[in-house]
Length: 169
Image (cartoon, rainbow, N blue to C red; front, side, top):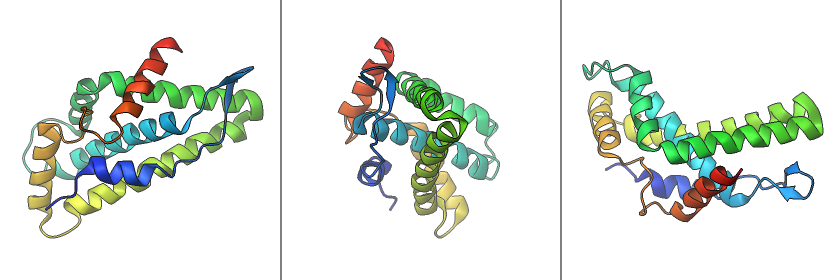
């Protein structure tokens, strides 16, 4: 049986770095809540993309991996957009205060967390046993919305807060 990604991501993403980044004088841009929420969305997006690459043609599905990801992004647009906006603002703030090296470090840290968590889920889903069966299950779960943001997600409040933050920033 596959592990629920919401539980895995929530537990693993709590360790996200929480150093303060300032967007403007006196405004704290970065928060642990926004870090966790954006990493959660990033990891889910990564998983959907990799499952698309690894599984769609194997299963005879006609959509491209890009189309598969776009469908997920559209269903989760409010949170996906907020997450990408947050990471972009963190990179801008780091660039303004520390230049290209600082900006690139923010992107590297985020990408490392997203990739680590996403690869763990992918390994659990399709890295054991029959790849075809794992792919069938993974694609079915994604189609049914297992990686979609819902009130049942353990970090739903953080995801909602990120979406609210995004509207006012």
